[in-house]
Length: 488
Image 1 (cartoon, one colour):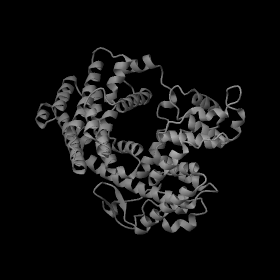
Image 2: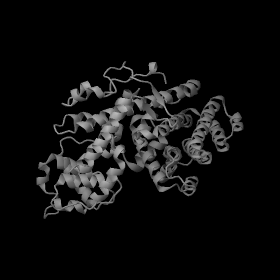
Image 3: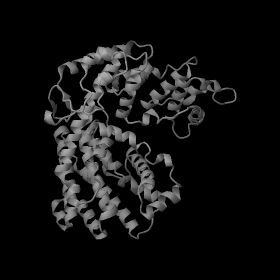
Image 4: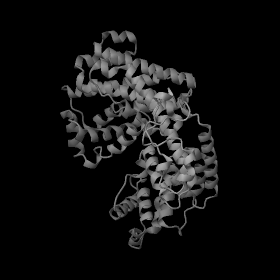
C-alpha cells in the first residue's frame, strides 16, 4: 500500500489531546497525530502473514522497553489483580499472556475471609474469564444471617460494580450469582454492558481515556496502551484497505444489482472476534467469506426463484465449474465468486500449514446452502417447522458453523487429523453447534424488530418464544459504528 494513499483518522489517540499529566513528557513518542491528513513518518508494509509492521524504529523499540518495564511492575506489584484488570481493559494483555496465566493459577488459592468485596469479586471474575472453575462459595461471606447480601455492601460503589461484573460470569443454576445480580442491579445508578461482553478495541479506546484521568494511573502503562492502540488501528486500516480492494475487484453487488454491500461490517465482526494483532490473515479471509455469505443469503431470502435455488444448491453440492453452466447468469457470478474465494483460502492454509482443507470448507458451505434450501421450502408452502426444527436448521444457516470451520484452519493452532475429522460429521462438536444456536437466536432477535420477516418465521419466533425484548434489538449498534468509522 502506498504511503500517499494512507491516512490516519481523527480518532487515533494523539498525545496532545491527553488529559493526563504525562502528556507533555511523552508526546515525543507519538506515532499518530491529531489530524486526519497526517501520514506516518515511514512506509507501512504487510509481511507474508498479513500482519502490519510499523517501520518506525524509535516507536518499536519504545514499545519493547515499555513492555519489559510493565512486566517487571506486574511481577513485583502488590495489587496484581487490579493491574491485570487494567492491562486487559487497555487492550495490551497479549504482551503478558504467560505471566498473567501464571499469576492467576496462584490466585486460585488466594481467597481469604478477610478480603473486601471488590478484591474477592475481581479475583472471581478474572479467574472465571480465564477458564478456571471457581466455586461461588467464595461470595458466601458477604451474606448476613438472613441469607441475603448485607446492605452495607451497597455503600462501596467500586465493590458493587465488581460484584455486578462477577455475577455476569455465572452459569445456569448458580443461585448465589443470580442473587448477587438481583442485589447489585437496583443499587447501581447506571448499568453498563458487562466488560466480558464488550468489543475489545472499543473498550481499549474508551478505557484509555478513563484511565488517563485517574490520579494514580501508571504513566508507562498508559503510554504503552496509546502506542499499541495506534499501532493496531493502523494495522486494521491496512486490512480494511485490502478487503475493500478485493470487494471492488470482485464486483459482486455491482454485477448482481442486489444484495447486501457489507464488507466493512463483516470486517468489524472479525475485529471483535479476533482482536489479537497476529490474526490479521484470519480477519481478512473471514470477512471475505461472510461478505459473500450475505449476498447468497439475499438470493435465497428475497431474489431467487425456487427452481433457480434448486439449481444453485445442486451446483454447490457438486462444487465444480461444470455445474455452473446450468445456472442463470446472476447465479453464475455469485457461484464463481464463492468458488474462487474458498479455493484461495485453501491455498493460503496449504501454503502456511501444509494441510489440505478444501474437503472441510466445501462441506461447511454445502451444509449451509442445504439449510438455506430447507428454509426456502418452508417458506414456499412446505410444512411449517416447530421451534426445535427451526433452530437446529439455523445452526447451519446462521453462518456460525461455516465461519468457525474456516477460522479453525486459518488459525491452525492445535489442529490434528483427529479433531479435524470431527468437522465432517454430524452432530457438530458442541462448541460449534451451541455457537450456531446463539447466533441464530441473536440474529432473529434483531431482525424481528428491525426488518419485516417472512410470516412463517415471525410465527416461529413470536409464537413459541414470546415477544422480543426491546433492549435486544441493536441498541448498542452506534457504539460499534464508531469504531468502524474510525478505521475507514
